[in-house]
Length: 271
Ligand code: IPD
Ligand code: CA
Ligand code: CA
Image (cartoon, rainbow, N blue to C red; front, side, top):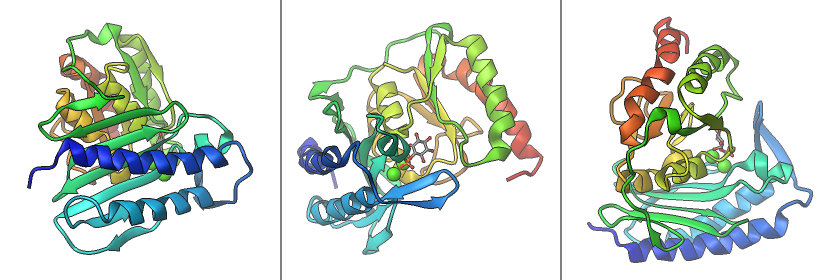
């Protein structure tokens, strides 16, 4: 079944409505729970996921639904909506405007259609397989060649996993040595959309979940970006702890800077 950009636009309408709810609550005091160390969830996350479930379930092919806060909601199907109601909850709760709503529509675990919306600025990213990627209705061009030395690299800290501090900081030192600079924005979905838009040239993080990246992967694919695992193979959603993405022209030096410290860490059998 071929998906259409029309469906992506219908999803975008839903995300804009959900974004209104988030903006109403932004910088107001929230009811918050900790799911684990440094892993927060607010009533807004939950309410928005329910809204997404109700509104997305009636769009597109008959699909299962998987969200960060409630897990699987219904149905076994080869199609699945993979949804993060707020990507960047820590930012949202601290009053920092870098947060997004991320929705990927996957077929057999492969994201085919993605929409990511940043409520505070109104930036909208969407893509459907084979039909291009768009930022604010403008077609994103294929990524142009860039050298690693002129790249701005985004990443996510291993803020939940102390055992990853050492490989992370070793990798960061190598990136700082080879690239222009690094950024940590706090929404992996937005980081990846910015890679697709050519703002960042690469991104890496460990221990991401499918809902962190499913919405952005179709955009990356449409502009020719690479998404790799620790072995430098194409990344399969939900498999492996290590994820790296970037402009194809600098992927080799970028991957060579980041991966060795993780390879030696994981080869010692530490999990
Ligand atoms: C988080 C954000 C953050 C990344 C974390 C994610 P959440 O998602 O994407 O940038 O570093 O790994 O868990 O918890 O805000 O939905
Ligand atoms: Ca997330
Ligand atoms: Ca989230």
